[in-house]
Image 1 (cartoon, rainbow, N blue to C red):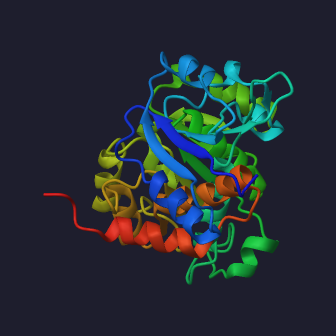
Image 2 (cartoon, rainbow, N blue to C red):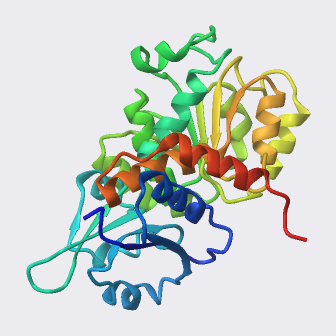
Length: 311
């Protein structure tokens, strides 16, 4: 039904900062989907059931950000296997149903986005080949496996990070959490996906980061600033191994303090907007039935990020 005008939106709270409309609108223009619209709608956890209940056949899909990725699960008719294993849905597909109400299917494109973003880092000049500290190439992404990895944070995005790291060949990462008492949901998700992480306190982050080939920070903006300051201060054994790859999913400010400190210490840093881009490309494919136009979406994202901030 790509020729019929449809609606889509990103939901979350807060949501005004979202760049998803930039990405999806650029995709619709590139695909010639006249009449398709994509908006950002502020929806809280409490308000989500009513919003979902009002969806009709004019809708193509929803993008979900925090704190809705888990809240939406009981509101869906179907959950795709990957999203079910991870326990987080960031994409809802709205499809025609025989009962007169649409059928809602939950999917997860965050895993795809993290894998693609990390693969960009692994293919960058100077990136470490997994485990050995030597220079890597794009071929290393396809043929080699990362031996060691660290995930910062223990929320819904951390579960997607565990699945992505397993896809890249690292089923035993270290998870550094701000509160070990709040890692139960992530531990259950890890068990479902056959991943065996070690859970440790964020207080010991520097030593863990020094031994990692891949690092994914899922912490909210500024939550890693103290860690970034400690990393920037340096010291024997406290820096990343040469060419180790960091993906910080936060992208405001740009670059984040952790991104800048990691790169300054000799590591390869992938900005969070690369994950945002790649997961959106996959969302467009799922919602429209046509391949997401990566180049057009990338160009629109770059222009939005480089635009002067409003006075």
